[in-house]
Amino acid sequence: MDQISLSLNKDSLLSFFKDFHTLTGIKIALFTELGQEILSYPQHHCPFCVSMRSSQAGNMACEISNEKSFKRCQKTKKLEIYQCHAGLIETTAPLIDNGVVIGYIMFGQITDNPNKSQVRTALSHALSSYDSNNYGVNAAIYDVDYKSREQIHATAKILEACTFYVLLNNMISIQSKNFIKNLNSFLKSHLSEDLSVDRLTAEFNISKNKLYDTCSKYMSTGIAEHIKKLRIEEAKRLLKESDLPVYAIADKVGFNDYNYFCRIFKKEVGLPAKKYRASKS
Image (cartoon, rainbow, N blue to C red; front, side, top):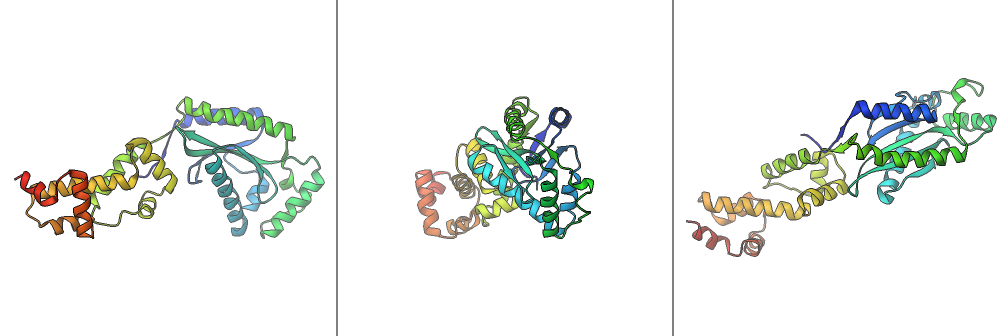
């Protein structure tokens, strides 16, 4: 099953990421709305982050730290600068397409502490806390890039402007048409089944907010209303083209309560189901 996804102009986007890194010396990465990394430059993590992710606990802590920042940006729709679980500085900027967050651009793996001895001690302690590889306080693993707070905030402003730039130049876009097509195909094939929001988000691997926002934007209606209309349209077709009793049709299009189906059908169509069938014969 195809899922809602991002369409990328990878060559242009990678060139842009390289330029950003050349200017700032900072790693930059693109994530989907669900937090999956799909492009970065440089592709590798800094040595400290590689060591942190060497253990299951350390890797999970990194993923949770990212996820928390994505959720905050999803809620506020604003860029944020924060400390990750290991004490490094990260910045996350939401990519917003017509009011819908479709992904995130992040930079980080830097420190705002100019005292190298303090940084090494703190990072060594962080690795030990997660049973990650620790090669000693004097190893190059702890030579995390330092940026002043002024540099970090200036870079964050540039990043925020960049989110508009990449959307304006179609480096990143949402494949909404494919999603709507796939969604409708799935709904029409499963009208008699449970079509709850929980099932649909699991089926298409998207968040509830993305499902609501995308349906509202591209179908001009909520998902529940859309499903109801599809069920009523299929009921109308079956009333016209089959000899199935009305109660069987109600069940076939997903209405387990026959009386509820009759009320909804009359409200939507303007005629009771039996009279509608008679008018079409």
